[in-house]
Picture 1 (cartoon, rainbow, N blue to C red):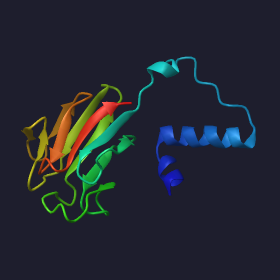
Picture 2 (picture 1 turned 90 degrees about the horizontal axis):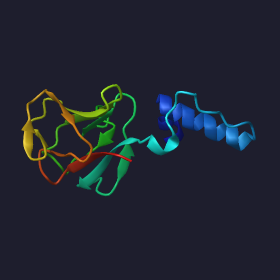
Picture 3 (picture 1 turned 90 degrees about the vertical axis):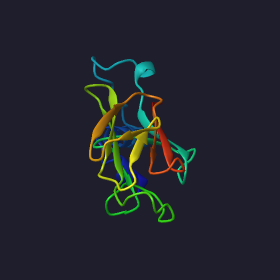
Picture 4 (picture 1 turned 135 degrees about the vertical axis):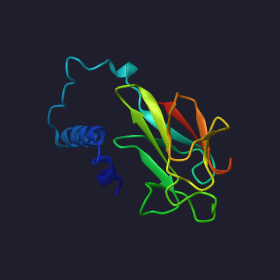
Amino acid sequence: MAGVMLAASRRGRAVVRERVTRVLGGPSPRPAASAAPAATLRTPSLRGLAGPYVGTTLPIAGDGIAIGRDPALAQLVIPLTFAQVSKRHALVGYDVSRRAFTLEDCWSTQGTYVNGAPVPAGQCVTLNPGDRFHLATPAVAFEVLLT
């Protein structure tokens, strides 16, 4: 299942292609001439600070990560015991062209908070690496970062 999820994004497909090529003994693909040195490439990530994902770091790829209690509506599923969190509470992503994180409140009932300040219902805000947010309660908190 992890391989299927990894192959769903452009970056994930490149990783899968490189690893399969390496296992089969073929030449390793060379980076494009315009690619930045490997030391400067950083992965946008989401790290759990409190709640069911505390200590877990997940890469943010493609269209971002929807967070909520309903597995049909969210990729990062919060257990039903956190009843304050909406079925699809928020969407966190990374805008490569702006080099900025985005956080959208998906019309949640109990609200989304960035560094303690509420995000207007249905609105999208820009986050910087290191910014923290929580869903409805500080008991479900995350941080965005470049790893």
